[in-house]
Image (cartoon, rainbow over all chains, first blue to last red; front, top):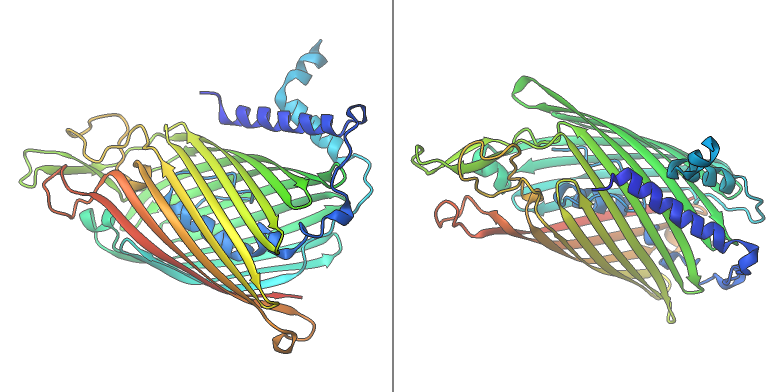
Length: 82
Length: 385
């Protein structure tokens, strides 16, 4: 099995490299959603993290009962329990 | 040549990229999240366990580029779960958790540092996290990187001589992308490495034992002392034309204990008038068993590693969630603050596919598979100031 740290670093680098390429002017790709077109995305109802204190509880409840952990998109830190 | 070889290293590439993105020319300034305070009561009840308590989250900007966060959480646990009543006595305990954090915004780069401590009679967990995120590509893209380190002290109540340690290392990366004026997507990856004492010191495995009148004997679990895991998660948020939001998450997880897990979640948020928001969610989770798990071993010391934790068995669970948020009108708010009251209820059913209920009839190894359901409640009040 590939070391997960190596796997993560390779994936992150690939993603980041892709992004660097997409920002490259030689590819002629411009940001396609202008700032003034983002009012729907800025609506508070679109925020998954609208209730952070509730999301932290949900993550804790699941982490104590399921084996999967990580990649929630938050800092994380483990269950801290037995 | 040495330089070329060095640049081939993914770690060096990643660090170089981070340096480049942090120093890229920038034109739009990001802002820190608004100040807020949240007070929450949480309750979990199911499978013989009752856990509840309060939680508080506070976030305050010191300047336009510096913010502090504080978090406190209390679990009051009373447990008579199936693991406990088959081999031990019901117990109750408290777990306190505290976190403090600082965020610093420099143009489009957000850096955060967080320390956390969780303390109960028999477990002390301390950790810190560092995260960096960067808006780029006309603010259509946000890149994030983070690391965490945690140190745990594990003890066993009633045994003063027992003291073990474990450490956890986390590294994560994410990309968030605006795809259309109504759709955003995120990809997150996280690798976690644990080492040290990873057992639950109270749990036992059972094995066939003809010398015992009950036909079954018990011995302590033995876990490997390392565990490496990797998670990938894809999320998307979509704005519906009539002002409602759809959320989608899919996560794939695997680890060196040969556990593979998938979870998928669909959420929907719907405002009603100016003051109410309704939320619905459905989530399905499924995992395979750890390689060294067995519900019933054929004899004592049957293999090097032994586990009968139901969390390491083959199982699935389904969550149905309902939430309601009431946005307080100005007449009910303090001064020029804005506040909300929310109530969320999750109903979770767990179905185990190779963990049997040892308290049920049927004979050793032929008991029905275990299942239970849990009700999870969160009631909270949020103030933005």
